[in-house]
Amino acid sequence: MLSNQQWTKELQDFHEELEAVNLGPLWASISAFNSVEPIAKPVPYLWKRELIDDKLDKAKTLLEVGVGSAERRAVFLINPGMKDLKPYGWGGTTQTLYAAVQAVNPGELAPPHRHTSAALRFVMKGRGGYGTVDGERITFEPGDYLITPDWSWHEHINEGEEPVIWMDCLDTPFIMAMNVSFTEFYPERRQPLTVPDDFSSRRYQGGMVRPVSDRQPKNIALGRYRWDLTKKALDGLSEFDPDPVEGYAVEYINPSTGRDADGRLGAWMQKLPPKFHGRAHRHVHTNVYHVYQGRGYTVMNGVRFDWSAGDFFAVPSWTWHEHVNLSDIQDAYLFSTNDIPMMEAFHFERQADYLENDGHQEVVDAFQPIMP
Ligand code: GTQ
Image 1 (tube, rainbow, N blue to C red):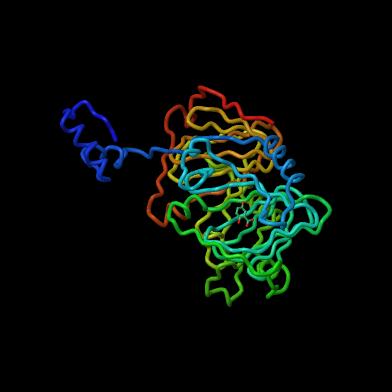
Image 2 (tube, rainbow, N blue to C red):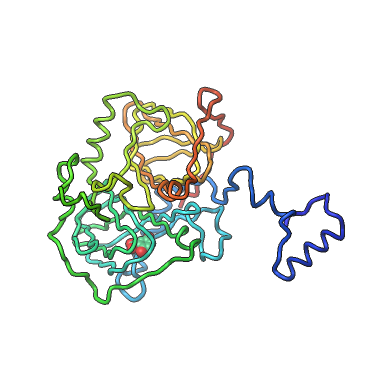
């Protein structure tokens, strides 16, 4: 409860009297309810590739997937600003997004299940992995983006010779906050294959046209978004001037609807050309970024977060941020996930451009990441 000089001793006692019987005085709490701007719990934060690799390597030796209750081997990113959100057992990476890095060793099977959380994956390393999603076997390679929308059955299998590693992102913190988490476990080790292998990507090879039967929207029109095609789209945009804030950026869409590929979760691939220095802006939606290629930094609320390939960073609500590519010759590629679909569904989305100083924040500090 907020304390305030203006309250008499009698009123302060009365506030306690109310609280003791599970009631509250609005007059003493209204400025906290109706905050002028979001009071963000998550903080801007960055996790280094070396740290995650180190911990995941340890998990790879200690734990076998598909044995007992070890359904998945993933290390998740906890935002230090949300550690105290005990109702969920853990916080999230932002208040709506959970992100993790998952490894499947050769020969392992992460068994099928489905849940109300929507999930997406970005493949970081390794060949020979595939997933089955609602009866479709989907092969994938590094740089691919994959979806398992809410309530779709999914399992992961590695039939290759090397570990396969990807980023997971789920809307679990949102699902937990709404108290709508349900999960079902498939009664067998594998779900049946109900369509030909890679059916959805074979149906959408052209990219610009839609099979006429998909005029009726499909939940999963396309299960896999190949890196070479995403890159081609960015190469095309690069024939023109970059956006001053984002560089070149595309969002992954469901080709049967034109809407976000994964329902409540949004995802982008963004290219910062050599020496690009974006202007700062801020928005209500949150992001978890994964540096796919390149080296640079992002300034968040005046603090410089240096990144290189394999790192992850979180951008909470209403945080000023601008991206910089430090290389004179190489492009930087940033994969990111967002909660734009949730924000838009509830009419929450808003954004603001940083107008001072040519759009650039004053850098007052440099973030020191934890290394292994
Ligand atoms: O691979 O199905 O990181 O169910 C968290 C929950 C991955 C998965 C996560 C999951 C999965």
